[in-house]
Each structure stands twice: as C-alpha cells, then as structure tokens.
Amino acid sequence: MGNGETGACPQLFVGIVAAVTFRVKRTGGKLRGKTSVREYVTVTAQSPDLPPRPPFERTQVLTHGAISDLQAFGYDESDIAEGERNAERQKSKERLWRLCRQELYLNDEKAPFATINWRFTLDAIEIASVQGR
Image (cartoon, rainbow, N blue to C red; front, side):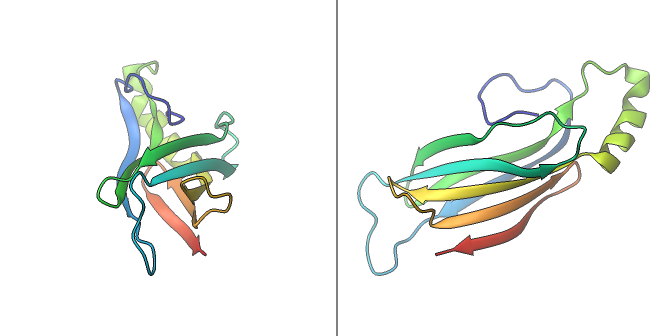
C-alpha cells in the first residue's frame, strides 16, 4: 500500500484501485491560464493493524479544466507464503480499513474549495461525504 509516492508497483497487489477525474469550473468566470489544484490528505481513522500514514500533499495543473487522481488501498502479498495467501486475504478483508480526509485547494488559496471524506476497504473505495464552499 503506497502513501502517494511514486515508485515500483507491488508485485502481488491485493486490494482495490479507483480512478477519479475532477472537473473544475468557476461560477461566473473562466479559470486563469495555469490553474492548479493542491490536495492535502490526512488519515482520520483506521484499523489498528495498519501502520500510521503521514499527511500527503500534491499539486496538479489542470488540463482542459480537469485533473486525475488514483485512489488505491491494499497490500503486497509477495512476502506471504503462497499456501497462506488465501487465509491472509480473508483475514485482511475483515480487518483492514481506513478513513481519509482530502482537502482540495485552488491555486494558492488558504481555504479548501472542497473536502472529500473517503472510506477504504479491500473491497471498495467509497466517498463518505463531500463538502463544498
């Protein structure tokens, strides 16, 4: 399970991945030339079996008014003996979960224009709530 960093993909990933596209439009006006969206993600709660995850921050420049985001939750079972993998998968599905708060900021603004609360399990990535200003 990554923490937003780039690098090698797990060899034997168990979990779920979701691709999200955010389209940004200003009410009553156009976006300026190099408009960017900064995301700041914190863990608000998680299963006790998971290691702590530090806050994650990333900025993307909008392309045609949109950015893409990849949400992933799972683990690499490469270090688990092949004969134990099915049992570990079942156990992990029952116990692994995480709740995250994703704040989205336009350009250098100090207040988020949207806040999304995500719920992650090995079977689903769901939006728990969305708040906008």
